[in-house]
Image (cartoon, rainbow, N blue to C red; front, side):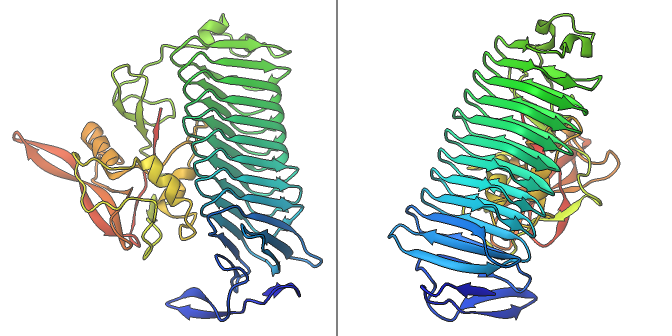
Length: 479
């Protein structure tokens, strides 16, 4: 139920069930012209900010249980105040414009998802708790994401795209936490007083990134992967009881660890192209933890190369490499969910930022990679957590690598050509790609046998399939 404030006109909603789906139709003018909100009969709330100029949205606790006060100031200065009764999940979508989203001391009864567009956005969560998980996905633009003093019963996941992004997570408790700062710009990730029951993963993309972690406890895998250029990773006060993985990409990188306890017999340190430095500043002598290393120079090995068919850095199988053997693609060939099958999702929705492809073969040049398409798919409200792109995006391999995605059709075709049968050595399988054809169909790659020079050979073909169909999901990642 929505209860508009006494200073604003009301927005009445009627709910109609059509083919089992809930549809919302406004019976009067919305509270503000270009933005909209709704709460469905299950208590799930959605706020859409479509004004392409500056907007300022604030959420705070209401006076009663499950009541959330919603205040938005749009670009014209119009102020809208609404009380929302929320008993389910909460979704905020900002499509365009440099918006500010502030959440203060709200007790959310479900999960929270915040998705912003391609502008410089400010997102701040201060205090409060989340009964489910938090997912923050920001688009291109120099974004600022802050989560301070929030207790999360489920998973915290923060993903930023290109731009000089700033991510700060302080005094945070969660079951698992993933911070992925992608793009080619210089990003800053600052984490302090972190208490994670499960896994912790911090991954940065290309760009001279700065990562600082102070006073973090993690009971499962703790993974830091820094991408290309000259990165700096400063870790202090770590208490790790699971496997630790520290990977540095190309560039002259610097990894410093101080006053930490790594309670594991198998920490993994890997360097990339360039002159990397490892500094031990505290009580934990890393060479004692892993005695096969005699010097830090041996721990930071910049000469790791891979070949097609070998195990990649994320634990998958390499199916494409460049001339140096240090950069390429790997695919995970085992099921990532029970039964291994999933729908594509978003049936009847033409994803606006995923380019439609009329047909695909191995020589097709797709305008977007699978990683780019996956990033756009997971921004959509129509995609559920059990759909193919969501499963691939959320997957973490056993060594703690978490930057997997649903591959494009051409990436999958390359994988079949290089590796033959991808999933089972004894059977032919079909696999979802991220490549969309229409609002109803997307592309699968299926294995088939053809005679090539008189030899029966497994090859891949791409075909269109209903988004409702269930098909196997094999995630891919770049390294």
